[in-house]
Image 1: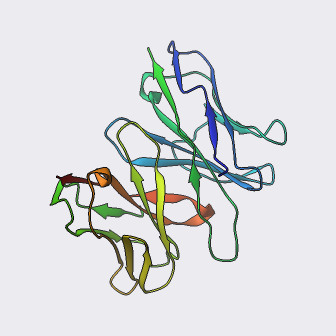
Image 2 (image 1 turned 90 degrees about the vertical axis):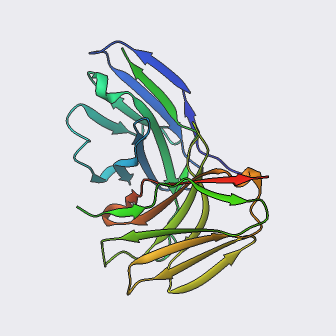
Length: 115
Length: 110
C-alpha cells in the first residue's frame, strides 16, 4: 500500500538555524500539505500546495516558512531561522481529489527539536 | 475562527463494549468530515470519512453525521485493547485544509 514518507524522523537544531524537512507524497497524489503538532496540542494546518503553488496557508506560516517541490517526487518545508517555539512534530500529507471527496493521508512525521 | 470540539476524555470502556465519540464543528459550510486515530508519538491514521447526513459503516466503526446539528460521531463496536488511542475529528475547509479537534483519548480495558 502506498505511503507518505518523511525524512528525517528526528531533527535537532540550534535556534536561528535553517532546517529542511522532506516528504515524498503518494505517487499519484497532486495535493500536498504540511501540518504541525506541538506536544500535547492539536494538529494544526500550515500550508496546502497544488500545481507548484500555495493554495492556502495559516497564520502560523509566516515569512520564516517556505515550501517547494524541487522535483517530481519530493515536497519540502523550510524553516529559515528556527525558534524555540518551532519545536513540534511536523506532518506531511497528500491527497487526490475525486469530486467532492478529498482524503488526506499523513506521513509518519518529523520531530523537530530546537535548542 | 472555525472550531472543532471534542471531549478530551479519557473515555474508558471495557473490552467488547461500544465506544461512542462525539465532535461538534462551527463552520456550517463544511462538507467533508474525517475521523483519524493517533497513537502516542505517531501520525494521524485515517479511519473513516463521511460526507452525507446519516450513518456510514466500515467494519467495527460507524460514523454518523448530522449537518443540521453540526455534529459528527464515531462508534467503535467490540472495542479491543488495540483501539486504545486518541481519536481526532477533522473537518475540511477552504484550500482543503483540515481543522482538527483536540482529540478524545480512549482506553479499552481488558
